[in-house]
Amino acid sequence: MGDYMYTKEQVKDRINQLIDPSCEKTLGATGGVKHIDIDDDKDSVTLIIGLESDKDEYKRHLTRQLAKLIKLDLGFKGMKAEFQLNKKDDSILAREVKYIGVASGKGGVGKSTVTANLAYALKRLGKTVGIIDADVYGSSIPTILDMEITPPKGTKDEKIIPYNVDGIELISTEFFLQPDKPLMWRGPMLGKMLTHFFYDVVWSDDIEYILVDLPPGTGDVALDIQNFIPQCKMIIVTTPHPSASHIAVKAGFAAEQLKHDLLGVVENMSHLEHKGETLKIFGEGGGQIVADKLKTDLLASIPIGQPQDHLSIFGMKEPIGVDYLGLANKIIKAMQAKTTD
Ligand SMILES: Nc1ncnc2c1ncn2[C@@H]1O[C@H](COP(=O)(O)OP(=O)(O)O)[C@@H](O)[C@H]1O
Ligand SMILES: [Mg+2]
Image (tube, rainbow, N blue to C red; front, side, top):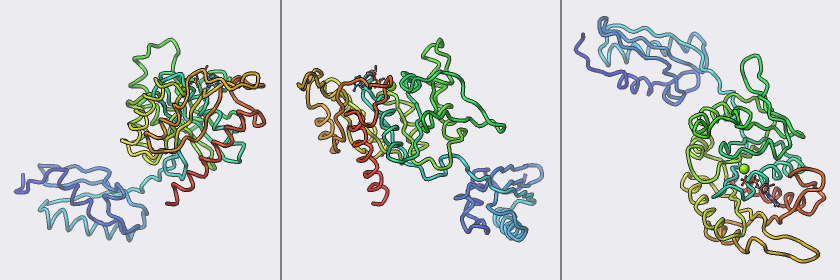
């Protein structure tokens, strides 16, 4: 063994500072160091380096830089470098998509109903919309959209084709889980599932908005979302009842702690219109309280109601359908404002 004492990590740190001549970024920035091995017997370093372009002149240039670093500066006897072309990230994560997470403190407040109706409203306003149903503990978007639960179709290169319901693309944890498996299986599986949803689903090229129906409360899914899509903006859904609004505030703070912008609050089941009277059967004011505490806006108050022609989706001419159009309009404006400031 030579008189050098460099670890793989130290060598990698030094190589990471070299510039990929094809794009003028450091190899650290492009993630260009694909493989590194130090052979102690032969005092030699073996490398696989990814480049943004594989022109010979770039390879020659970088080979000289690498040899100088490895042999002259670090004192190894030998170096072997192979080059490959960096793979382009062709997943949805490499695209300009507006993500909106729909969160709540507890289940049953209508988070999924709001998500699905908001998707329809955005679609009716001319937007291309997808839904990620990530609420593994109470996945319900397929039920809300009145769909049969069958595994999604795959492509030849093992990508997942999302469902298309009335022009809205959908992927749901529900399609991948056997309903009779216990809940405890779901946590660990979900981590991988979100990776699939972001990397392996062939969303249509023109998708503009993706709504994410989040599990209630905080947990691994929230952390995964923060990791994959830190730019995701959040809507908090609550009912007017103090018990729901109290815990909705917590969900809002949790989202802020993960550095997500809040778009605002939706109060669902806010009242019931009955024979010309407005009945506040679940209490009053919860949505505004949550919005005030989170220093954000109350975006909509959606009354209790049942759509005329669908299980859960209101027609655009029904009063509640109009409420959802109003919500969608506010969200489109807020998303534009948030991306330009
Ligand atoms: N505005 C509303 N009026 C009447 N029923 C509603 C309303 N919003 C939701 N629901 C019903 O309440 C139940 C829970 O809604 P859901 O969207 O599944 O809640 P979550 O996703 O928060 O658990 C469902 O049966 C749904 O149909
Ligand atoms: Mg739900």
